Each structure stands twice: as structure tokens, then as C-alpha cells.
Length: 333
Ligand SMILES: Nc1ncnc2c1ncn2[C@@H]1O[C@H](COP(=O)(O)OP(=O)(O)O)[C@@H](O)[C@H]1O
Ligand SMILES: [Mg+2]
Image (cartoon, rainbow, N blue to C red; front, side):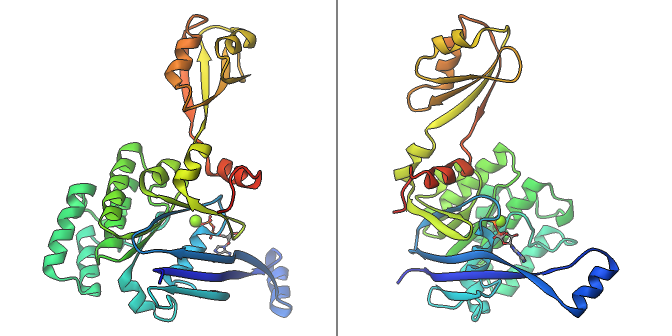
């Protein structure tokens, strides 16, 4: 049996449509109108124990709604969902013991309490033994640097501190499965690295992970399987290794040269790349296959023409990956 089994999962939100002002409110009272938003539109998903799955898609695709359905936070409009044999929304309490949930956009810590007190509250709520509490807190400190955060009142934490604390809080009870919705959003590189290292350890210890993120670096570091959702439907589900090369192949490198070199000269130095002119004089965007040409090689190639004043590399965006699925370049497994 799979750990997570969702079939035909649908969530429709009904939102009131109100015209502005008092008359609008009054009219709504007399003849309420609604607009239905289908956030999740027939999702089939199976996750095996120990898998690390990246669940990605553009904004509004239905990722967070899926996570809420799997966590039992909201009730599906139709379809079936089982997590380790339990119905998440019917068996909410039993389900909460086996899952850990993090919403990167919203803290689950008690806002006015020092972080340490949130942890002791969670410990008591979940009945975590003193021994488990100690070992887990030591782990959280070693990888996430939790120790220095514990005395601080939650509302005074920086975003990076808050996310580290929230991540630890979601996992304090040692859940079998972790749903992590945007755990690296807004974090700087150093904190991001810590979080990724933590997630790798979690995965290596056998915790099942469902990771929602906009950051392809997170996915490459942590997950072996990629599920892409768009408009509430799964449009791709397959091994990450099979698509990684494809979607991570192209790199856009933006160059600012010290002088206004003609486009043809730059293109002439880079026969394997696609070169287009940027906005100002001396600005170019070079698209390379990162497996064939590094940013360093691009710089060396144009250096005889002019000094490179500035260089910026665009990471591929989830939106590009989705576009490729629709273009038929990535096939649904
Ligand atoms: N509580 C809600 N009420 C009404 N509409 C919602 C609610 N939550 C989400 N939606 C809508 O459902 C769609 C999917 O949202 P969401 O699951 O948050 O997407 P994602 O996490 O992929 O960005 C969006 O159109 C969003 O506006
Ligand atoms: Mg979301």
C-alpha cells in the first residue's frame, strides 16, 4: 500500500461575488451570487514510503490546496484521499501524529511566546518523550542552529530564523511524512543551504517528503521525483533524473560589456550560443547549454572584444518547465 493515495481529488472553493458598497452588500443579501474556483481538479497521486517528491507548478496551480487536503486541513469536494490508511479530514488527530506540515507563507509558532515555549507546548501536545525531545532538539540545533533562536519571541524573528524554527516545529513529533509548502521562500542562500541540508538528512533517515517549491535548486538537492500541477491537474509525474537535464539545460547569461560592441561580433565569438541584444549599449543575453558551455567560457570568449562589467545568470523558472510540458518536450510518464 502506498503511504499517500489520492484519487480523483477535487476541491472547489465557492466565493461570494459582491458588488462594491452598501447597495452591493444589500443585493448580495437578497440574491447571493457565487463564483466557483476549482483549485484541485481530479488529482491522482501515490507516494511510497521514503519517497521525496517535488510538487511544483505556477502560482495558483493548486499546490497549497493539495497539501491542505492531504493534511486534513480542508475537506475535499469529491475524490478519495488516504494517508497511511487514514482519511486525513475524518481522522484529523490520528493523522496529525503521522504528518508534519510547514507552510512557508505562514508561521505556526505562537506569536507572542519565546520559541522555546512553542516547542514545549508542541512536545506536550504530541506527547513527545523527554528523551526524544532532547535528541531531536540537539539535531535541530546542529543543522538548523535552533539553539540561538529558542529564547527569542516569535514575532521578533527574522524570516530565516522563523523558517528554521517552523521547520523544526513541524518535525518535532517525528512524523513519517512531511509536507513542506515553500520552505525556502524568501530565504537567503546561506539559510537555504541549511534548510536543504536538513531536508536531505530527513530524507536519508526515511521520512517521506512532499516538497512544494519555486526553487529548482531545492528540487535537485532533495527530490528524486517530480510532479507538476497546473490549473489543478497533474500534467507531469516522473523521475526527476529523466527530465533534469532537459529542463535545467538552458541558462540565460546577461552580460554588460564595457563598450558598445556590435551584436554580430559577440555572436561571432560564441558560435554555440544564442545571442540577443539587451536594452542598453553593450548589453547582451547569451543562451547556452550549460552542459556544453559554462559562464566562465562565455566570459573568456567575449573578453578579447571588451571587458565584462557585469554578469547575471537566470536560473530556469518553474514556468519554463511547465511550458515545456505543454510544448510536448516533457512527456507525462
Ligand atoms: N480559501 C480559498 N478560497 C477561495 N479560493 C481559494 C482558496 N484557497 C485557494 N483558492 C484558489 O485556488 C487556486 C489554487 O490556490 P493554491 O492551492 O493556493 O495554489 P498554489 O499553492 O499552487 O499557488 C487559486 O486560484 C486560489 O485563488
Ligand atoms: Mg501555495
